[in-house]
Length: 319
Ligand SMILES: Cc1cc2nc3c(=O)[nH]c(=O)nc-3n(C[C@H](O)[C@H](O)[C@H](O)COP(=O)(O)OP(=O)(O)OC[C@H]3O[C@@H](n4cnc5c(N)ncnc54)[C@H](O)[C@@H]3O)c2cc1C
Image (cartoon, rainbow, N blue to C red; front, side, top):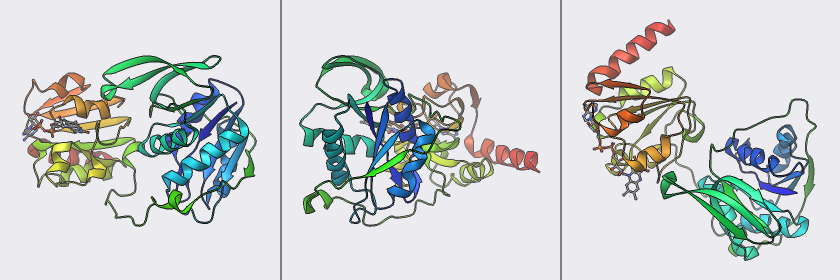
């Protein structure tokens, strides 16, 4: 049996966690899940649609938002009770953090960012992303129970039409005040229009070449295409856009259907976050910029002139 930690946020299942369920189904037909928080009970049955039989829910009323140490302890407690062959979560910042806490509680190793997993008796073999995905490492993990996160977008979400709702089993892990010390206490709006960067199908991303005052047409295009704005680290470091919009090794890893890279040079650390885009359009004054070799469509020119023209054309095409 494989146990998957499934994240959720303010009443919505985490889409990326559903990819970890697909990875688990490739290892064993018996997949169970753990969810944590007072509002998890209502969401848990939906996991049946993705192949989960049973969801263990720690519906502690003290957990009303993301609480990583408590979630890690709850996950460890469930794993001790049901003894799975592996404990998985998606390799999002939150998934990795919760698994790291669970592994510390269980005193077991943790393999992060796996793209392939195979299980054997007491030893698992994993392939995982290292150096921002530039190196794939194959490693053997010697442990009675593999604890591993699967790299975001390495597996697709797969639903099972007509599957029965998952059954829900509530449990009460012993949580101390220290487990609740790290928690969300406030949220500051990003102005991102409600489409999350990690899940957006269209991302209009800007770099230094867009300039501090040049993001207006990028916002307009993102809105017209139902997407969201992203950016490079130079842009967040300069304070032009919030860190939440940063794509890359130290930002968000994305896999949209369409990625615009505008005035972005294509540094390794940026490519690490956007190389899973299905289609990339780059706009750059420099035809030799690295990003141009990754792009499906490369437009050589000044973003300040090209972007308003694209916005006008898309608006006209939409009527
Ligand atoms: C440990 C570490 C982690 C990092 N993590 C990240 C990360 O997560 N994400 C990230 O993005 N970076 C990251 N970086 C930084 C990264 O190395 C680059 O410095 C950064 O990505 C460059 O940003 P940029 O492409 O916007 O700027 P630049 O490299 O300065 O490129 C600007 C581009 O704009 C073009 N340009 C200029 N004017 C115009 C115009 N008018 N129209 C069109 N194009 C124009 C130029 O030709 C150039 O290609 C990290 C670095 C380190 C060391």
